[in-house]
Length: 147
Image (spheres, rainbow, N blue to C red):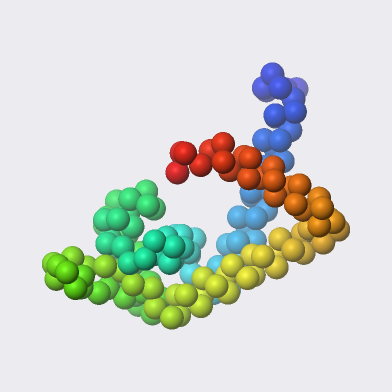
């Protein structure tokens, strides 16, 4: 029984949902190995990609209220992943800085995730991987304005 009037699109949706579930499950297993939560992983990514952010700026990126982000940063600071630093231009502003351990954890997690994908695509030739990448980029680009 089809729930959408385009069976091909419906099949793509089902496969994407299933693949996302598998990748999310493996991703969480990897995060458990490094003793960080998905929210901490997301925060590390944003901080490393965007530089030092305030709690308010990070909250906006994570779609969280500032109090939730404050609790998240408290736990990350306790685990020596980040530290709070005063902005040199305005001492009233506190920014979040990723420490060496935070950089290493993120790097190691990303390496493990790549290994998982590499293993999952072992039987796929490089030409097909390039084609697959092209179509993933099409999907990403079509939705990138929503970020």
